[in-house]
Image (cartoon, rainbow, N blue to C red; front, side, top):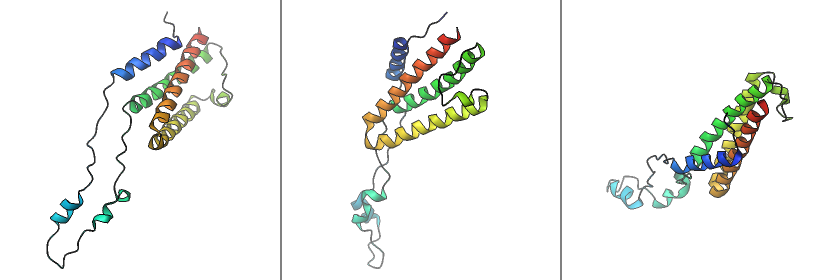
Length: 161
């Protein structure tokens, strides 16, 4: 029988994060004002591009997402799915839902999954908003959330025994 212990789960999560390769997309290169004006026709009647219009308000943000955030999001989604399974498994064996916010949803699997999905999407949304202001806080939020959900899942499976 496999036992889940929080230190091993956290260690496994950290190893998985350390081994993951960051996904990369093509970077956005802001236009060079000289290149843009050089490409414009030299005809005096042709409109000229004002380099002051190339300010940051017209360009998409080039703020990079920390490489660990996407794997943290994916692992959080996986942990939510495991929480659904472990909760159902424990409830079938006579356990009682300890979370007062979820007690009303344990009878309906679809409702419980919908609440979990909404909570997961909300946390990822908050983390993405936080990332634009403070990358470290966004990472800390997701690490703490993953750690808490790891504990909840292992607790559910232990309770079901």
